[in-house]
Length: 157
Image (cartoon, rainbow, N blue to C red; front, side):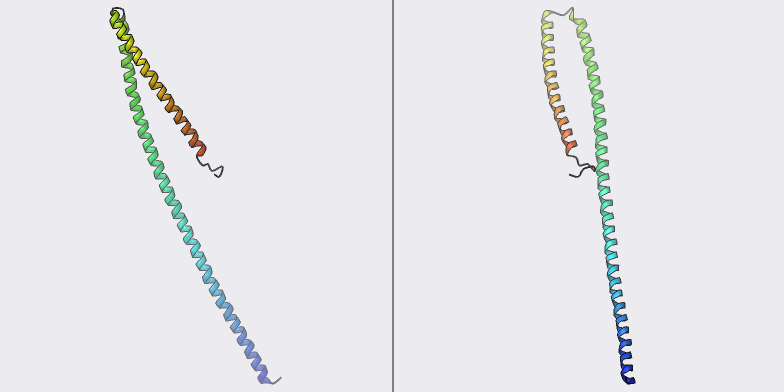
């Protein structure tokens, strides 16, 4: 083969390999750029998710703190109400003791009035106990319903 053809073929191969090498290098750069973009998107997604989780935790903690505060306030109110009820019950016991000591000397008219008054009081107590029992049963049913409906981590809905 003439030297000129050989030189031409060598020239073409050299440039072809240079072209292929450059093309391969460009592909590597493009893929590296895409990989960098994907990595950045992944990092952004992780940061967004972490922020959302922190935000959700803050909201849940705030709700829990509020619920705990309200619960403690209600417990304090119940304790105060209980103290009032104990005082009233003690006062009623004292009144009953006084009435019992006066019973012997009371007139029959006073005894009849006292008996009627006690009967009315007991009727009111029975009505209140019935109302309290209905409310307690309703509360118990609500608690059971909430317990059954509340999602658990053990079982998916």
